[in-house]
Length: 246
Image (cartoon, rainbow, N blue to C red; front, side, top):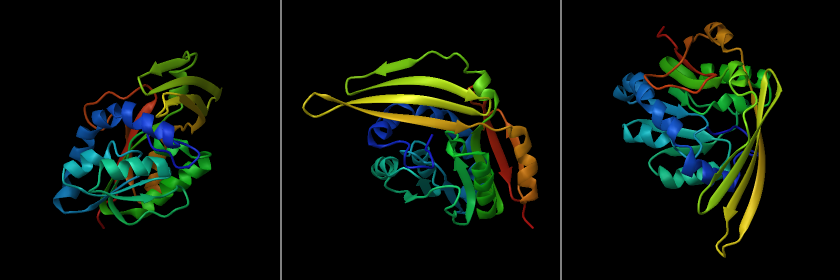
């Protein structure tokens, strides 16, 4: 779930993300590792986009992959460095920072949907395609336009733990946009509380058209409903593809 801009996931929310949102990476990792098995066998480089606090990264490294994990949030990367010391981590902001040549590019948490507009998403997808070596594997998830349909009139939610609390308010400003306002409360060492607020805006896509665009860039890809046997939330789809060997 790591974003591409540093206004997202400042230190307090990065901490909450590490504590509360590992379930998505845990659910997806089995299918992703199956897709990446040939890459591991040949010692290829896996580039992870939007690695966040390393929730998927730790699985990739644990399975024996050589991983370069990237994110746009310094606070998220700080946590990931401590959590996955065997991974190489780098701050990288899509769509304009180039990715290194990779044998696989992966990302979970609808990373590209955090970009500013649809044009930025297409430019980022182009950058992923350029970076993928022949025989390489692409495996990411994306929010479709159906994401909004499934979440209309979703009530405000709250979660409280001993050391942090979060209130999330959902907004559907237009059919191709989804937003949520987060109020994050974190306990200080003296027992008092501090508050930080973030608004996250997602660009939603008609994902059915993505494979045709990638085909023009040399990537054969399909849209699916899972990486393996996991069940994704409504409106979240998988994009899995390869660059065929010449």
